Image 1 (tube, rainbow, N blue to C red):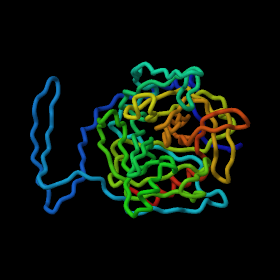
Image 2: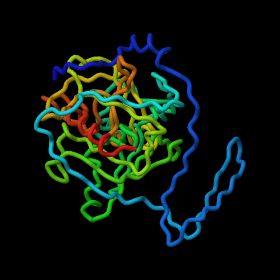
Image 3: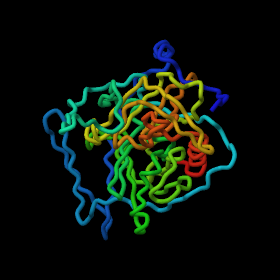
Image 4: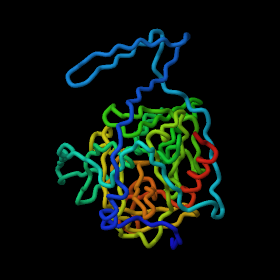
Length: 353
């Protein structure tokens, strides 16, 4: 759509020129070890610390307690707005102590296994050559704002911090079976890497999303869900801003994606790609479908595509929804649009830290 927006993504050349102005060093956040436990008595943890190799082993023993997930409290379905409301772009937040890097530190993933059958070679879903994904090892902003989402339905995907205690993910990750059974949970762990993460994890207290066709049918242009965390992780980790997608940005190789694809890191390690472009976009009421040929796989659902803008803010333009055929052309699809920004804006107002 031909939006008149105040801010635009920086080109690769502008990013290089402005790196000394935007990038900065920071200090490592204190390690956060958080567990929710149940039990009849007030927990009295016993902590023991042991030296092992070049690190320390911290043992926590809580007698009479059981580690559990905190059950979600509420789920709210809101109607899709019939007309534009509120801003089209929102700012992000960078903690004062956080390091900021425009290009992330990475590591090469293990070689991908080939699957061969009688009729030839089989390939993972939605991967386009050249596959530019690598393992993300960077702990700076904005790369650390994406995390692993898990649910009581046994599903896993990606999500991103968009407020002090707000996470945006894909609507189709809603734990519909558990909700139907009367008890559910969703958990989010930012910068999760194979069991590790400096900011710990938080379960979700409340869900908010637009209405869907059914529990099994979701509209791609509105395939996003806002999660309110029990813990205000965004205060310490930082969070991204958001924006609608403008037609003039098509073809610009300015977007980065972080997520937890199953075919890179087994869904347990974050994968990153940058310098990606959007091929096309379509309106869906006030939602938006964006096409991309960035390589995605199961586990990427809910992960953000984001860029650094001319005012120094990092904003996401959409979250991963699925793979589809658009007029015979197979592409991956993002959910975006005015309603996405409105959902985040309303959550920031209603659910502050």
